[in-house]
Each structure stands twice: as structure tokens, then as C-alpha cells.
Amino acid sequence: MTENNKKNIDVQEYYGKVLQKSEDLKTNACCTIVKYPDHIRETMALIHDEVMEKYYGCGLTIPQGLKDCKVLDLGSGSGRDCFLMSRLVGEKGEVVGVDMTDEQLEVSRRHEEYHAKQFGYAKPNTKFLKGYIEKLDELNLEDNYFDVIASNCVINLSPDKEAVLKEAYRVLKPGGELYFSDVYSDRRVPEHLQNDEVLWGECLSGALYWNDFLTISKKVGFLDPRTVEVAPITIESKEVEDKVGDIKFYSVTYRLFKLPELEAACEDYGQSVVYKGTVEFEPEVFVLDGHHAIEKGKEFKICGNSWKMLEKSRFKDHFDYNGNFENHHGIFEGCGGESPLENAPQKGGNGGSCC
Image 1 (cartoon, rainbow, N blue to C red):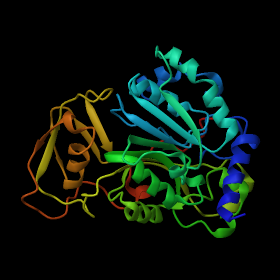
Image 2 (image 1 turned 90 degrees about the vertical axis):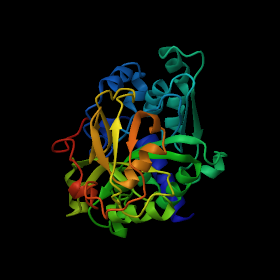
Image 3 (image 1 turned 120 degrees about the vertical axis):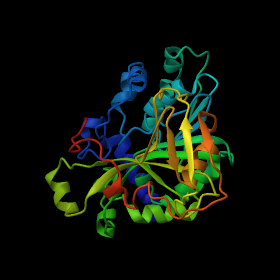
Image 4 (image 1 turned 90 degrees about the horizontal axis):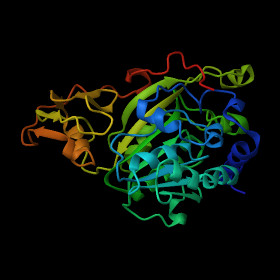
């Protein structure tokens, strides 16, 4: 048995048999505080209790503008986020969940009809597939098919994170995005901790050092990863705390656009946009990332990459665009620094558990 296969089996065991509810976790890595928007809270009230009880996530991984979209959820678990997005995409949209744990898939599949009725749909717009998120090709998922891929505290559990990102890039439409929360460390996690089954299952020892993540993302084609928000992770177990020592862990929400024309840096072309206020649930301010909160009706200066993220994605019609790429003025200074752990807006207070 390969080491990668062993890690997948360990995760299946941990999330299928060891954990029975979110309170069983030893850290808040998979369950950090989130302030949910009103429309999410309203939909959460319609989600089946068993689905909520079996939920393990480290952030809110539901982006704006999902109406009529095709969405893929990597590591869908009990299906909570899939069912939330099921309502947001509407009856004409589609949500596909992929998970490798039989017990979790059983929960999500058992409640598909329930949620279709809750949302007033004639039939479910969800589908749940058993498989590995680094092997989407084995599930016959088409190239260039999905508008959005979401994932909530799962990619760190994969033993081959580069393969996950490669497959995500493959199945996304041009201009589509991978929007996800995951756990990152402020330094590389040593191998002996990576081999600890509990630390891996708790979403800690599988965490990538943030700079390694940026390197891998750019290598597979996601050229300008954007940090949406960051929350520190607390450890509720003295035993786990002693094992990890001085390593600090964070829950980080990223959005990665499939736009091969993006540049390596944020370049200034003297461009700006004006938000029309037309993205559903964001009538006054559109948040692209932690450094771009764009107010309705107010001219907002942006770099060339941010321009492309808006103009070449599903957000195109929600903005007016001023300028072009004819005149270059050097580096754009308004997109934040390199380190998501130091420069992105912190969220979640002291990182206390929501469980």
C-alpha cells in the first residue's frame, strides 16, 4: 500500500467512524467562527439536522453570483455546503459533490429529496459521487465544465495537493474559479507530524506552508491567488498542542481564477471599474478579496489582473470598465503583500471554536 493510499484510508476511518459530530474534533481547524450573511443563515435554517450535525468545515466557501451556475464541491461530506449552494444556483443550476467517505455520502444522498422539497424544486439539482478529489478524471468529470469549484477544509487532507489543483483547473471553465477555505501553516510541517494519523485527520499536519501553496497554485495555472480572509486556529487539546510546538496554523479562504492571461504581478494600467450593485446579495459593496471591497457607483482603481478577474468571469456584466491595457505605469500598489497570514484581514476574533 502506498503512503498516499494509507493517508486516504486513515481519513476515511477518521471522518466515517471516529468522528460522529463536530464536537468530537480536538481543534477548531475544521470548525472556526464564521459570521454568516443573512441569506446563508436563512438557507441554513432549511438544512436537515443530521446534515448540519455531520458538518466539518473551516470557513464559508460560498462565493457570490451563483445563480444558474454549475458548481463542484470537493470533499462534500454530509452535503451541507452542497445544499446551501443548491438553493443559490436555483433549479436550473447544478451542484456536484465529491467525497471518499461512505458514511458521509450516505447522509448527503439520503437527504437530497428532502432539500429539493424544502427549496420548492421539482427534483434535486444535486448529485453526490464517491471518489478522490485528486482523481477527478476517474469520475468522468468533463474538461471546462464547472463555473465554480468550492471546498471547505478538505484539500489539506489530500496526500497530493498539486494533483487536486491540477484537476480543479482542468474541470473549470475559462474564467471559472476555485473558491475554498483550507488550513495553512507559517512553516513547513515536519514529516514525523505528517505521519500522525490524528493530526492529519484534525486538518493540521496536512496543512501546506502558505508559500508552498502559492508556488503550487501558480505552477498548475492559477497565476494570482487572492486571499479573501484569514482566521487563526486554536488547539483545544494539550496533547495536540505539545506535538505541534511552535507551528502556527490558520484557516485561509482563497479564490483562484482560471485565467491563463493573468500576469505574474499586479501591474498598473491606469484602469478602474464602477460596480453597478447588481450581484445578488451584494447590493452596496462587492468583495473580490481582502483588499478589494468595491462600493456601488464609486470609481475604484484596480490592477490589470483584477480587471481580468472581473471582465473575463461571471461578474463581467456587473461592472462598467474604464481604461485599457495600452499604457503601463509599473507595479500596482493596492493588492496587498505576498503573505496571506500577515497581510490579509483577520477574521474570527481569537479563533475560538464554534462547536
